[in-house]
Image 1: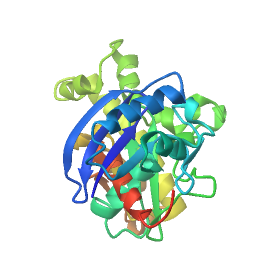
Image 2: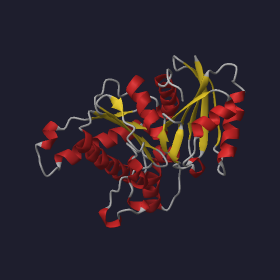
Image 3: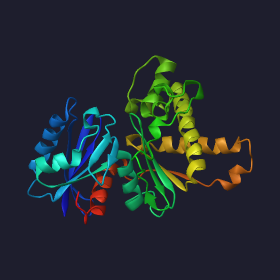
Image 4: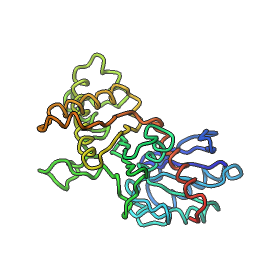
Length: 300
């Protein structure tokens, strides 16, 4: 079996033709339509129709509170036009094939739990660092969706009690890749991208300071997640997770937090692994495929 798999983001749509061995036969990306669902559906159809004779269906990860059972997006996330929209059924009608949807953070969790860094975990999580913070939770050996399909939406956790409820106090603003780059900009006045930031780390003390501060912010939130769910392992995802120094630094900061904890013996009982995600930027594509297989004997 082959599927057309889509990873829909706020900026671009990644797509691939993938088989059951998770081998990618063709791939590409296009800009995400900004204006309407009709424009979005036309774009998906245009990509799918080129592979119609090879693909048995469509698997899609996308932002928002996604009801995979009904194919409905209850909250559109970055794509407001998808909010309260029967995205799955409408795409099925347009493309003439089965369509399975899953939230992007949960897709990453599906991929890492089934084939990647979280295999065998009873309780684990993915922490996807991008323009915001994506998340997915494994609890009691299952990816958690939640009654309102919002489980694992780390971005909306408020971390500043003095500005509670404001965007600036949300974890998605403080622990995103953009937050790391903002720290560097505040120190130097320079606006650079992530690739340039990591190039500068060897010789730029301000970049090292920004990475230290950012890694500590992420480590603090992992500490909080541990106490909520007794996590065994947390996988750091997103394109940034390819930077070994980042995951090492988050791990280092986490252990420093434990050493400085007001209850010293905690450091002897907390045992959580912080690891890079296996699939990086392909996690959502792979997770969408796995979600399709899980729904294989059900009507969508």
